[in-house]
Every structure is written in C-alpha cells, then in structure tokens.
Amino acid sequence: MTVRVTKTAGHAAEITWAVEDDPRGYLNAAVDGDQLESALAALGTTEDLATDGESLAVMVRHTTELARLLERRAAVLVVQLRAEHGMSWPQIASRVLGDPDKHSSVRRMYDSGRRHLGT
Picture 1: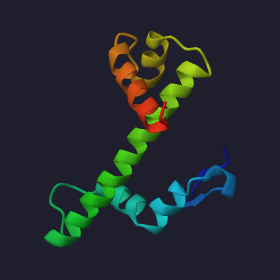
Picture 2: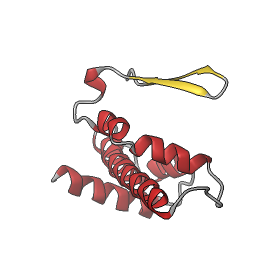
Picture 3: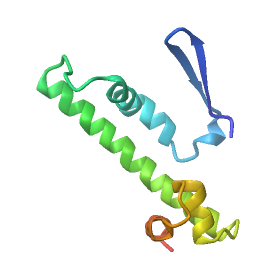
C-alpha cells in the first residue's frame, strides 16, 4: 500500500497514492467529491459551527457518505481476515475492536462484508 499522508508543515498535510492503490476510484472520489474534506472538517469542528444550515447539511451528507464507505470497506477487510488469514472470531474481535469478547460484532461485520462482496 502506497497511500501516504505526510504532514508537510504546521497544520498542513499532503495525501498521495498510486493508481493501483485505488482500483475502484474510492480515494479519488472522496477527494474530488469533497467527502474527505467535509469529514476532516467535521472531526475538527466544535458543536457551535459557524456556518449556515445548508453548508452544515452538505458537510453532514459528505461525512455520512464517507463513513458508510469506510464501514463497508472495514466489513470486507474482516472477510479477508477470516477467509484469507484464518483468524478466529475472538482474534478478529481483539485486533479490530480491541475486545476478544465482541466476536458477535465482528461476525455481523463479516456477514455485511460477504453481502457487499456478493458471496
């Protein structure tokens, strides 16, 4: 994986990736469609946003779109952990959720990932 986030100076960063790191175009779409910018702005803001309602609604929509995509990708990655790396449910739960007792949660992620993969 060659996706890199490099802090360039102070409060600035540069994101770079290779074409093969984004075969489905998700990274490009998140940057070009302003989802990444909105999500990062939402992370950094306080509850008293100094913006109009429409701008706030756009920020929420973009943040939600990116969050959904990340949830789907995480679910697919859980399928990989189980299918390709043979990890047990407690192992996955420990590594992904930080608690080996949350294996039912990772099973739900796994099921969701399989649905997204069409398997």
